[in-house]
Length: 110
Image (cartoon, rainbow, N blue to C red; front, side, top):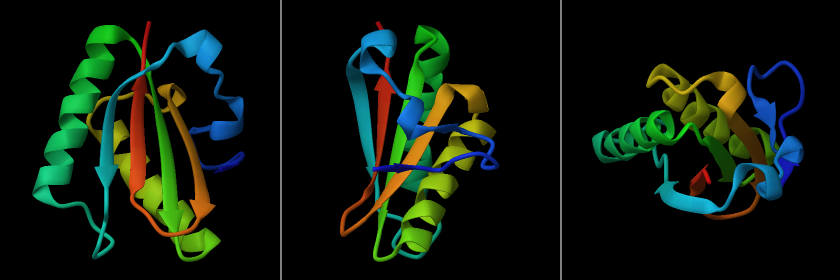
């Protein structure tokens, strides 16, 4: 996966180190079929944000799309929703890769 880099407001996936942040305990897959989150996806992200607050963990988001822009946009849509739900942007690592699939969300804590 490629990290977003400076300017996104979130940490780049290239900065993520599982030896520091712990293993993945909670995952969600977000399809964004119409480019917007469904009610069920928002609910799942809400659950992840609550758990992140309780555990003081970090969230890793990897967007997938048919081209770099689509993949990046999906990752950012999910990251922005997590931020809106109360996860600090410095606790969200965001990246993307070209290819089919859902946008993956992982919560890491020790």
